Image (cartoon, rainbow, N blue to C red; front, side):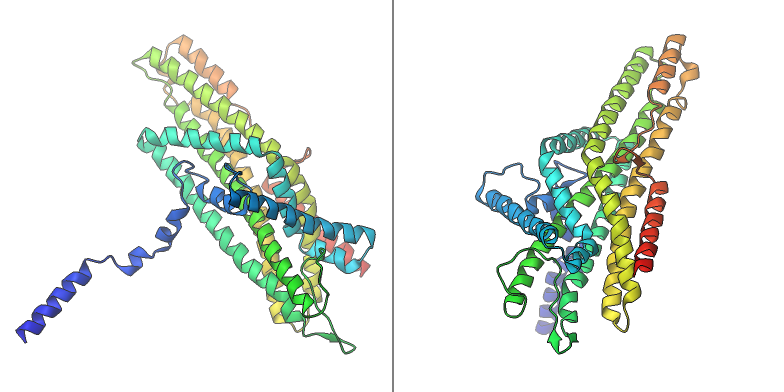
Amino acid sequence: MAHIADLCLNYYQSVQKFPKMSDKCSIGNLLKFLEDPEYPSVGPHLKLLGFTGLWHPNRQTLIGRFKQILFYVTITFFFSQYVKCFIKFNADSLKLILQYAPFHMGIVKSCFFQKDYKNWELVIDYMSSVEKKQLDKKDKKHDDIIHEYIKRNRKVSYFFWALAFFSNFSIFTEPYQKNQVNVNGTSIYLKIFDGYTPFDNEPPGYYFSMLIQTVLGHIVSAYVVGWDTLVVSIMIFFTGQLKITCMYCRLAIDALNSTKSHENIAKCHRFYTTLVEYTHLFNALVSPVMFMYLVVIAINLGVCIVQIVEIHDDITTLVSSILFVIACLIQLLLFYWFANEVTVESTFVSYSTFESDWPEANKKLQKEVALLGLTTKKILVFRAGPFNQMSLTTFIAILRASYSFYTLLNSTN
């Protein structure tokens, strides 16, 4: 018995040496492999875009060339749908394009990303250099702000990734559920995209065609998710860096050292002007896409609401359609919410200069503080095209436009 007890004790002690499964397999640990210390804010997003081939620091590898070919195949497939709809107008084909417009926006987003790839690299490299320098200082005030906005970034991004996954699952399974419907004894086989494939519209060719649509649809969905969350993450970065700018302004004046105070003011001005320069570059990258997205999403939401209203006795389709609309609304809200945050945060920078110890400084430094307050007075705004500011007011206006389009379609029917 003593021998058995010793064996049990030894086994228990050996088991205690292993880490708990819950600790080892926590979600945080599983997602750590997505992080990249070179890109603290956007590491996971660059890995997703790199997986799809949109982000390609080294494009000359065999895998890089394969992803490039796959990109052109995907673009060609979706473009063939537009050509078919234009040459031989088909209401059902146009309806598919409008219904799944966010997928088609993936073509626009990916093409613009490739066209402006060098400028995207400039923005992302700037973010990387700024954050690495700040983190290398090991300053608690810096670290708290950076870790807070990166944590927020991850929550938003991973939530959106999960939402896109479940939304895609419902969308790509919907045609198979509806294929059981018969009209006058003839089976109807539905599609998601009406691009060209060398297969018949009935089985077995239909299933090969659907396989192509599903694969290319998931690729475009990855383009959309990668681009969207990258853009939102950059907006969160700018908001966080504006908070750091406010901190620099508050700490600019050292009452005991006027030389250091002068250097701090110059540092604040240099940091702020560089940050503003890159917000302008970023705005130039996203503004054309956001303008097209604004128009497309307003129409898409109206079409989807009409279809939801027309659904009867089909709970599965109703749920999947509602989930798709919710995903579109969340996607839209993310852009306008975080763009609005950048605008709001930019208004605090000028005020922060006068939260410093400027009354204790000499007149020359007080003049410099006043000039700093004037130069940091600029309100940063992201735009969707030349006319529309990305704000919560515009978000509400888009919802109103969608409802107006819905009432127009409903009255036309």
